[in-house]
Length: 571
Image (cartoon, rainbow, N blue to C red; front, side):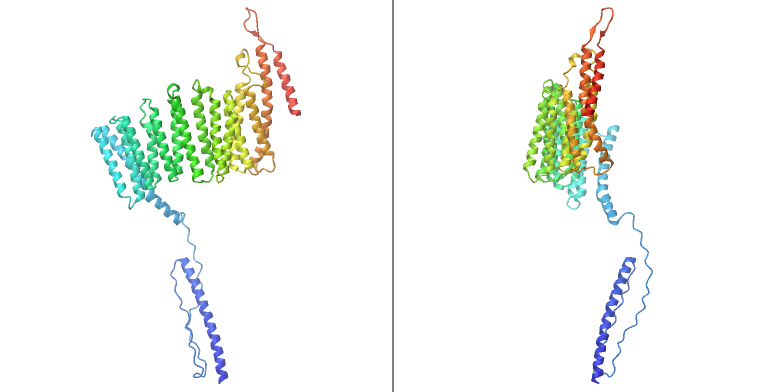
């Protein structure tokens, strides 16, 4: 009997182990079913695990009790569910798009429609003489104040919508002030100027308070529209440019305070665009010389200071657009300053000094970048490149040389050097279009200078080799020779990689170098004999008009062309 009890104990233990395994298998099967149903979207039916048997007492039971396990339905695998088609627009993208349209775009469109409605209503009342001009303006201001009040009232619960309402109110104020000044003459220019300044200051403060760029952009557009809206031909350019400088300072302060770079870019474009339009259309040397030069320097300094603030104070990382922005600011300022000085009787003799001053400014900036060890070294290379570029063109500019060609060639060489030796691919890629521009420019200079000394133009003749034109050609050739040297160094990788563009550049750059080296001396040889030919004129008798020239000099020119070409090819 004791042996049977031991055997029963063993069998019950084994049975309990099997039941535990069965329960684990049931749980795994149920988990798989749940996962399948979750994927198909149907409701899963939970299967209860089998009940564990009760363990009988060995003394009271002669035979082992068989555990009762409820019958389980056989598992029939279902066919694989059909994979639902994915929507064309993902759920997150659709939600973001709906949110953008509902919360952002619709509100801005509504404000735009409201402003346009105010303008149409004002025009309709003007055309039909429904109300007096003063009443129209007053009602317009009351509408703007009401819109501003609603926007401020809704700020606590709907901040973004409130910001749009406030920006719309400021746009209405700008429009009505312009209408009151320009259409009806209800307020003088000085008062209009002051009101515009107040509106701009309020817009700046609102943008900082709401922390919304849309308000700043509305204020920016209205502020920069003032020089066009309030221009009455009275010649008060100094007041308008001063106002624009104040607006620049405020907008750039916002851009830096809130790190809103789009404001910086818009201010840069608007400022230089307005200044260049004025310089090209209304600038007068007698009255605007000091004014134009002063504000050109001021605008250049403001944008350069903002650029340095982003890079040095905020430690902003270097980006490709920084090169474009810095080069554009320097080039626009240099071009504007060159134009202003060149049109002045005394200033035209100071162009070389002006170029050296540009180099000195960039040198000071490069020193700052060099001492700031944590600053991006690429900015130091860029500022240093501008220093060398302006120094290179200073002497030809002072001597009335072809400064555009030298500027492009010098910048191309410097950018190529920085790109190759300092492993900055963008600089190298930027140098290739500059090389192309420099080449076409030198060819145009050659066609304008050489070959025009026929007949009696002795006042325009110059010594062979000892003239500014040959120096310009030599500097252009030296720039491409330097680029060719860097290109042939095998340890410096190219930013173009390996491909057709790299192969074309590999052969074109040395070809331009050899061609410019050959043409620099060939043009001087031809110009020398052409000047001798022009000076050989002998007047004929009174009965025969015209001069007699020594035509054999032109044959000598062709002979020396051939001698020089053979010597050049031999070397």
